[in-house]
Length: 61
Image (tube, rainbow, N blue to C red; front, side):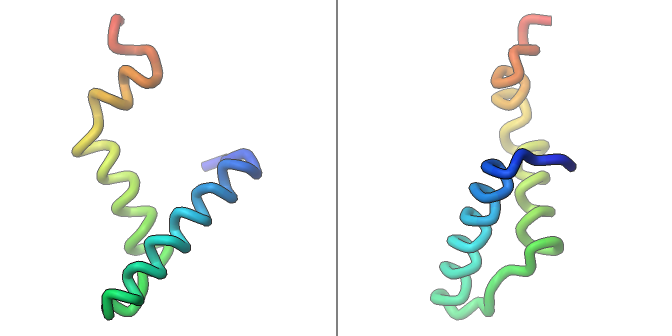
């Protein structure tokens, strides 16, 4: 998936934030591919599907 440099930076920062929270909570941190990206995509598809469709302006089609 292509992301602009600013988007990559924001996503990396979000991952770093959640990885840090996981470590502080004693969970040992998040793996980027197996934990973070998988959950990120799953959340959009399963939990926020309609909102994402609206965000793309495709809800009126």
